[in-house]
Image (cartoon, rainbow, N blue to C red; front, side, top):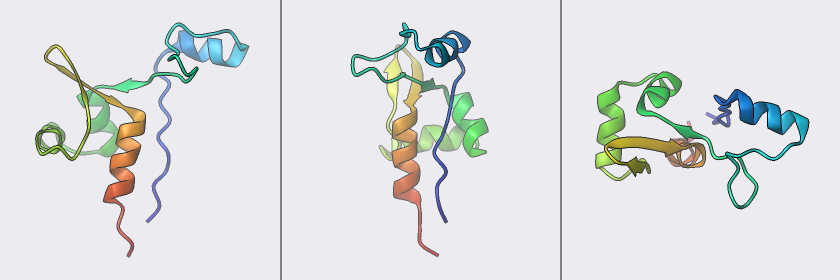
Length: 89
């Protein structure tokens, strides 16, 4: 089973900046676009229940950022989780 890289572009302003070559206000110091996913984004992307996402975070298996009471997920962390979860058939 191979894992397909996740591509998320929910910010049309950043998309336009990337395609036009203009710098994006959402760019990180290293120049990479910072894409954060919500719990609902992960539920739709991975086709799992919200409770599963919360359980994985609570168990420490899925890395997240806590912004107040909100959880956000870096795309790179989700990809790392999927790589670690990948099993050879």
